Every structure is written in C-alpha cells, then in structure tokens.
Length: 496
Image (tube, rainbow, N blue to C red; front, side, top):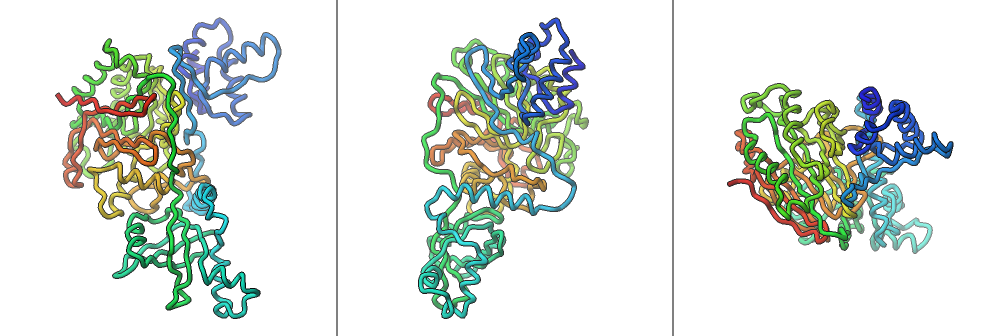
C-alpha cells in the first residue's frame, strides 16, 4: 500500500482520504490500480486527486473489459456536501531558470484582452501601431479617406499594459503597451486623475483616447475602462452550511498564538449545533513561520528547524474533525519557492495523516456547494498598499478590490512580490469568484464588491517587532465564518 501511495505522490497526484481508505480495504494489486489511474490521468491531462470513482472504474474495467476509467475532479462527501477544485496551479507550473518574461506578459495581455472583449467598446480597439501610423500620415492630410481620418480625430480605443506612470502638477502621464508598440497618454480631467491614482504598473486597461487639440503628438484620455468583475448575483448553496476562513498560523514563531488556536480546534470539535454546520475550512497560507524570511527572524523563533515546524503544524491540524474538509494553500513563509504562483506544499510526509485535506497551490479556486471561492495568500497586497495613495494595512479589503478591478492577483512586477516566468499567467482572475479569501497582512476585514464577498482572515500570530517597524497592527485570533446559503459572514473571536 505504501509503495502505491509513494508512486502516486511522486507522479504529482494526491490520493483522496476516502480513496485511501477504500484501497486499504481491497484484496488485490493496489499498486497496479494506482498505476492504471495515473496513466489514464496523464493521457487525458487530468491533474485531479485520485478518487474512489477512479478506483471503482478501474476494477469495473478489469472485470468487464470496458473502456478506460473515467477521471473526475468532483468529490461528494458522505454527508451530502460537495466540493470541486476548479483551478490549482501545482500541475501547471513548469518555468525554467531564465529571465524571459515575454511569454508571461504576452499571456497576461491576451487573457485580459479576452475578459475586456465582453465590453461593447472592445470592438473599437485599435492596435497602437495603427494609431501611430494614422497620426504620422502628414497630420491626416494624406489619409486615404475621410472616415479613417475621423476615427482618430474624434477618438479611438486602445488596450494595453501600463508600462509607466507619472503624476505631474496638473495631470497624470501613462505609457500603454500592446503587442505592436507603446504610446504615451495623459489624464487631464480631475475625475480621471483621481481614477488614475488607483492604477498600478503592469495592469491591463482599455482607454478611450483622442489627439490633443494643442499638440497632435499627445493623446488625451477620455475614459478609463478596467477589466473589472461585473455586477453579479453570487451563487449560493441550496442548504445551510458554513466555511471557516483562517490564515497565517506561523507555527514555529514565539508569537504564534497556540492557546487561542487550540481553543479554536476544541471549538471545532464541540457538539455545538452551529459548529455541526461547518463543512469546510480554508487556510490561506503561512502555515509555519519558516526560516530566513525577514531580517533577524531567528530571534523570533522557538523552532529553527523548518521540518519540525511543519511536523508540529501537521500535528495541530490533525485535530480538525474529519467531517470537515480542509483546503490548504502555501504562503511566502512556507517551504518551497516564494515566487508566484506557488505549487502545493511538497513536504507531504507530514501531511499524509491529514486525511480530510486538499493540499493545493497558491492561488487556487475551489467550489463549495456551488459557491466559487478564490484562495490567495496575498503577497501582492504589500505592493498595492505601498503604491496606491490612501491604502493601508488596516484596510486590506480596499487593496483586494483593486486586484478584482485589475482581474489580476499580482499586477505589479519588480517590487516586493516575486513572479515566476511561467509561459501562462496563472494570476489572471479568469472566473468571477463569489468569495475572495486572502491573508498575509494579518488584519481581519470583510467587505463586498459588485456581488463578491471579500475576506481577509487575519492571523494567529501576535505583533512581531518586524511588523511594528512596518506599521502593521494585527487583529489575530479571529475566524471568519461564511454561510454558503446566504454569503453572510461573521467573526468568531478567540481572544478571551
């Protein structure tokens, strides 16, 4: 049995706890069954966990000589609750150690342009080269016809990434880049200047621009159109069930609130009628404090061994009742690469005993009883808060709104948040989430934006000296609970 499990893990597949228990009950060649399932998943490029249905289909095929096994990624619990992992970057990460970001930004441009294509104005988008060619044709005097001349004299739409931004005395200058070139544009109206203050570098925009009346070399912005999420009615569960949202345990730190976290675990195991309705738990990264993450961190640690930090964290998490399914993503303090996107925690030896866990990458999108929940640790909130005037660590929801407007989880390249040169930009927010859950900033806050519930679930670590220097005042020891039938939320505070 252990050989079969190791084989699956080495091939990049998790075995669902129910499937693991089912395999243990079988009196047959388990290793052969696992290899058959892995081969089928590889053939059909299905990087989903191994489930009971996968095992049964292999057994059925062997008995009845039917077609190849059906591979699924939907799990239905015995209590009738269902979940689905819609997106997990773990099996798509395949970057090389070269500084070639062309494919990454080309992917960002194309994926976000597809999102913008839903807007009616997108039909009028012109390439930057086309706009420059029109401008350079003797200031329109030699254009082929009047209709083409009017296109630029009036206004034109352009879509591209923000490569440069400068606040000037009476306006804001931007440089927009698409696949054909770049063009400088200027915000002059007070309303647009205010809107431009929330823009961050490397995010995608659609702009309506027109030639300046004073200087035909300049283009003035008439409208700014974000990819943004639309106003929408969120999906909801048909039955009353709850998800508990937490993040940033920082096990191994001397500031880890072990008593409060154990109180939380005891509460989860109580016979309280409400607790029995909690079906899912989502943990948004920084399970451990790690080693060498910030200057002089060793002074803040009670455990300077990353493996023992992970082992102790697993021992704590094992106390979560098996009737609750847990989704766990990594953060920047956890072992593994720090660049986004991050694969699932690779030290699975410590987590094999966590039978009711789905250990997935950062970011990931899961569906809980039909409710789409986007999990992201939140490293990029540092860059957004530092860049956009008026934002602070005390109000992370406002920074998370900017990520939703950008339709990107880490739009700024080259600041504090490292981004890997993947061939696909997996940080684009393709699906509109019903719930957007992040952590990282250690401040608990809940808000809403265009139908999406936004949750930053704080931390289980008291204020460190490093946080003091950063001006971060955490609100730790709090769990956010969301009713999946109504998307109403409330706090459960363990600071007593």
